[in-house]
Structure formats: structure tokens, C-alpha cells
Image (cartoon, rainbow, N blue to C red; front, side, top):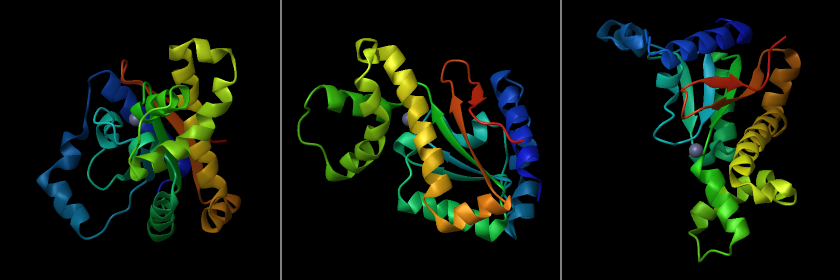
Length: 206
Ligand SMILES: [Zn+2]
């Protein structure tokens, strides 16, 4: 298994290829590759991303079959099943890197802002569970001047929500906390731009 830092480099390189329209991953989704990974997987990174149809992790990072263990949920929130999925992959495959991948103009963020600004009608309990997890990242920002500038507010809220999910993964699980302390797991945040196709990493690995 490669190191977290090497994994991050691979993601950076893949993301740059995707943004430059130079994808190489066709070879890694081939029939041969499919047979290779059928017997077992060794994903080098775990991606917790948003369900947004415009942010498929394998495509925006230009990776193939067996490379990424992907968890997608609206708003890239962290609830128990997301923590469990990360624990599973980290413990079972020895995957050393977790990336929380948020993105510009995330609908889960704008929906949360709308709900906090105007009392909207009755929301499904299940959808509300997602909004409730995003809300702490938005509430503090709504108390500042940002409330008068929706674009800036959304931008900051997307960042805050990514950081909240990173923090939750770092501190919301005894197993993950131990792996991080031992140096066998690193959790970083990243933001994908719908417009440029580029990914900006919010943390570095020393
Ligand atoms: Zn989203």
C-alpha cells in the first residue's frame, strides 16, 4: 500500500489531468483491470464526497477500478454510517488517506441557508437529518456580515462544512482517532470547483 502522501500526490495529479481534459483512466477501467481487482481490492484513498451528479470522485480524480473507496451522501456530511464506512475501509484494506470532498455551490448548503433564513414548510424527517448536520457550519456565519452577501456566504459555508466533516472523522471514532495518532491514517479536506474542474486541498501532509 502506498503512503498517504503518495496517495495525495496521485489524487493531485489525477485531478490536474481531469481539469486539463487529459484523462488517462480508461486503461484502469478495462476488462483486464476488472479481472485483476475482482479477487480483491486495495483502494489507496477513501473519499467522502457529495452525491451531486457533477462530482463523481473517480472521474474528477481520474482514477480507475479498485483505486478509491467512495462514500457519497448529500452535503458530504458525517453520520454514523459514514464513520462506519471509513472505519471499515481503513481497518480492512489499510487505506491510509481519507479525503472529505465538498464542492462549490453545494445544494445541501444552499438548502440549509434557505431554511435558516426563511421558515420553510414541513420538510421530510430524513432530509431534515442532513440539514441538521450542515446547520452548525452555517449558523455562525449567518451571525456575521456575510448574511448580506449570499455568494460569499455559500463559499464560506461550503468550507466550514468540509472542515466540520474532517473534524468529525478525526475525533468522532475511537478507531480512527487511534489510527491517526499511530500515523497510519490521515484525514484531509478538499473542495472541488464545478466551474474549473479543479480540486483545492485544504490541508497538507507533512
Ligand atoms: Zn453538494
